[in-house]
Every structure is written in C-alpha cells, then in structure tokens.
Image 1 (spheres, rainbow, N blue to C red):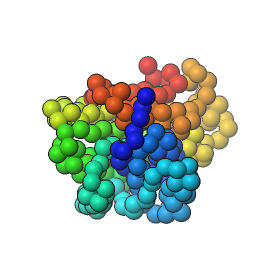
Image 2 (image 1 turned 90 degrees about the vertical axis):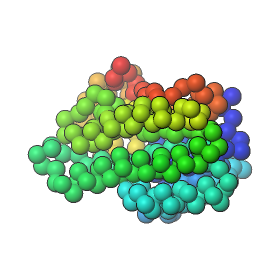
Image 3 (image 1 turned 180 degrees about the vertical axis):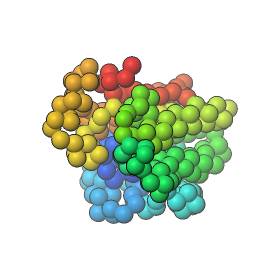
Length: 248
C-alpha cells in the first residue's frame, strides 16, 4: 500500500519543516525525491543525504518559487532530465504576520508571490509534463487559517484560502487527463514558524485544539504520501484537514 517506487516527486520548500518531512516520507515509500530549496543548500543536502543513506533516491535543486519564470524553467529541466514528474508537492510558503493596517505593500507582494503565484507557476510547469503522461498528483499545502481565519494573519490567510480555490478549479481542469489536485490544511504544526511562540501562546493554542496538542510534521507528511499514492486515485479537488480538530 502507498507504494511510490519508480515515481519522481518534487517538493518545494523540501529542506525544512513540513516539506522536509514530506521529502523523507515520499522517499521511504520508494519515490525519487527532488528537494527544492532557496538559500539553505546545507539543509537540503542533509535531507538528501539521509534519504540516500537509507538506500533511497534524492537530489536537490535550487530555485525561488517567488520567481515564477525561474521556477518553471527549473521544474521543466528536472522533468526532462529524469524523464518524468509524477508528484508535485507545493510546500514552500512564507508568513509575514501583523495587522493589515501595518503591513507594507512589499510584504503583501512577497506573501502572494511565494504562496500563490509561486504555487501556480510550479503547478503550471508540472501540468505540462503530467498532461502528456496522462497521470499525476499535485498537492498544495494550505493552512487551517485559510479556512477559519486568524487575527494578525489576514494576508497569510488570504494566500492560503486562494490555494483552496486553485485546488478546486485546477482539479476540474485536469481531471480528464487523470491528474488529481488536492490540498492539505495543516493546523498548528511544530515547525520553524511555531518555534517563535511563547509558552503562553502555545498553551492558548493547545486549549483551542480538541486533541490538546500541536501536530508533528510527520503527520502532515503521512497525508502527502496518501494523496500522492495510487490509492488516492479517486480523490481530487479536496482539502484534507489535518488539524487536531481545530476546525471541523
């Protein structure tokens, strides 16, 4: 079950947090994983080394999803060199928090450039390959705040909500070519983004989660593996909530 042997999976933001966990999980199931990073080559290399050390296949590729043209060219080159691209996981994202009144235009532009336009650019590049193959999996990492909202994260929430609309529309566009498009909406997960929270803030968050704790990146990675697998072939246009019951 969930065998990905022989498939090529590209994970944006694959050197850290959820992307890192997804890269490791996909490789464990047999996929050849291409780990994207922007600037931290050492972190990406570490993930690749772990995979290769366990007998898996992995490589790293540098590009900034916020640069749409560069991202599309990089993905096209990967697909051409490896001969295929079966899975795209759009995990790269940024959060610039603050009340909307205090956010600068450059902050808004960067949030949408990475979280929305970057995901669209990567999906467009992957789609060209997957349509020829008449198969593929595209997985967007949205967020629980894209569904329920959160004070101080209006712009971030808007960008993650946009991914849900993209998921549904693109799923309809690509269904005739047997390409599935889905999103995952993680709740509060133990990553670099949550490390900056104080213990008081963490306690307040946990009190709002029915399961009483934050999630682990590996729990999101498990959902990625499922959606990337053949077993999820009849699932498309969906948002899979992995949030401990924070939003139902």
